[in-house]
Image (cartoon, rainbow, N blue to C red; front, side, top):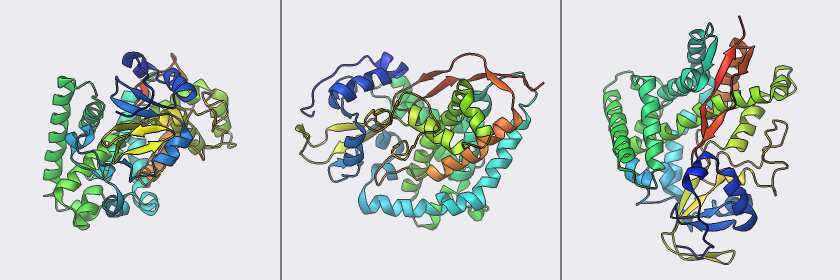
Length: 388
């Protein structure tokens, strides 16, 4: 372990609301070892912004990490030329041009179809009834796993997220995660026999055309599912609910003085659906008088960096008017989220505006409760539909 100061935490409290602990760490122990997580946490924006780019020391290659063990070595767990080669292989799927010209219209069609089945409901729980399905249907298109049911897409994503966050080695969580990864493998194997596979620039078809091994392809599709389902799902429902808690800001969007993209980017900063990114120390290193040793585990706490008082004024306040340029909700270095353009299009150009066009007169029935620290989102968002 590193020589950083040691700070104990209560994991249950931290999962319910990590921000008081993160505030404490930023103020007193910006680099600290947390025994309950078996890792050294970086909580200041500047430290994370600098160190995340230093891949020779803060390596994404983690042979013994949970993600590698559970999914295989995907591109997020590779550095340098190997990582960049795989990013290049998936670029035909995630490029701004592909998103605009190929995926966006399909997102609109799927989202409108989902909303058409909800419009007459007087009460909505939008995590389970809206955002989960929107995110899953989009992910089916992008991955190429078109025959997977949207409920299964959500199940396997959550199972892998739970597995990758299973730092207490719960055997039930581990078993479920194994079942989820097997399900994805079976769906990929089935799609390999589909004669229409290459009719769309999906992750499966793009990686096959790039000549990647099936092992690497499967690992990267699991990566896309683990991050591409839960985070958009939680961001869609969370942004809708938060705007309804801050109706004056919603009115600014409706009037045209602010945008849906500003709302999404502020939510991603304020609640940080991806709250942490792990790294492994590749060799002995000293940073700010803290000694790090080979194979030490490091957690870059994005959720903390995005509420750093040195970067953002009144950081605990949701404000769509703020400049979110410094936000690292999608990362900061060479591992900047490859799916960021897809997320912005799906959420800010499709899901949010279409939802409020179908439901212009909805209200929160109770305050939103959030959960999680490595991945954070609303438990539920219950709305009353007063359209009728």
